[in-house]
Length: 441
Image 1: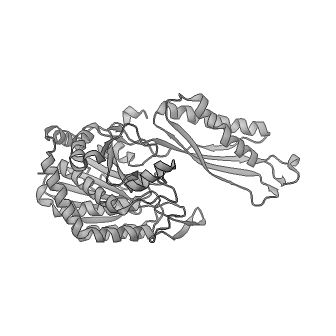
Image 2: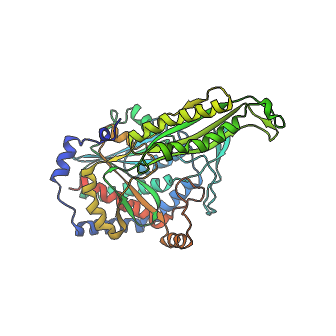
Image 3: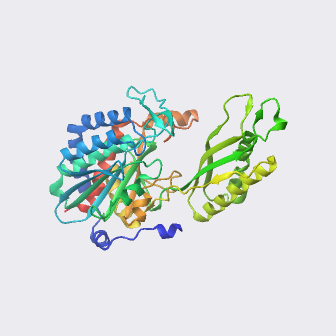
């Protein structure tokens, strides 16, 4: 589907709402932020404890039973009507406060199958079964930050309910990391069993400075495809390679050669990434195995670039096998997350609020994020939205890293460690202000 076809069209009610709204006044925003902060001063300790509990007890996609139960309990205590097990482990929390638009706020529930190496006192030591084998689990993408801010925004909006009218639809989405959770919730009747949202919001922590928010209209994240290839060979003793067809050699050659699709077939100015993140083959150093399996990811912004890469990858894999005299490889390039496309009108309406609240820490992004997000499925289903970034790193840590010429650990790094305070506080402020701006009475 062309990127332009993904651009959401506002519902009639939301279009009128946005067209008739005046620009946010800095004084009103300052007053609202002060009220939000007063509530956070009283209740931040609870959010911090919730965040650290979730961080220490992560769960993988479609296994988030305890995580979902914790959030459901929090929302029921605030007066939301909560439905669990939507899309297997997702939750939907509804709060009605008179006539007005329905606004969706999403958080993700799942963690990653990886070991945490942050050394934090509340680090995860959880282990679960993944792909039939034991695996460590960690919230190395920041979904635990999102959940704490999600609960905090719900608390603030309920406390300020005299200032707005409409329906809040807070959803806890399972399995974002597999880009399957949003589709699962939609397939389970998210927009038929519950009100169809007029507007949606979501946020994602990053390695920007804590206390900052970043936003942009249009394409905000990349398309993704999975890369799964099995190279076939002929096994042999490690001392007799002449009797083998070595699939490890095929895999190694492919990892290098496929980068020519990036460097020589696409426009150098167009974004495109092919990353092989896992190679699985063999059982011992003196055995040449008969298969090698590669898993990776493909990221693009533009669908023409995506098509070129999807054509070049299997061609390269087959050429590598032909060079080795091996059977043709099995190539699977399954579609993953589609690009998140922010609604221009919602972005334009929210940007002045963020500027009034955060000043220079409200950042207008100039280029999309290279990661992918299945929040795009909600947009494609007809929920015009703003998906924005949330800074999570101590500015001093950022400055030290820059001075040393070292990159900061980013999402999916075992060392990714957002600073809870003020990151959670900023997430609560930003989300609450964004919602108030479209439902304020």
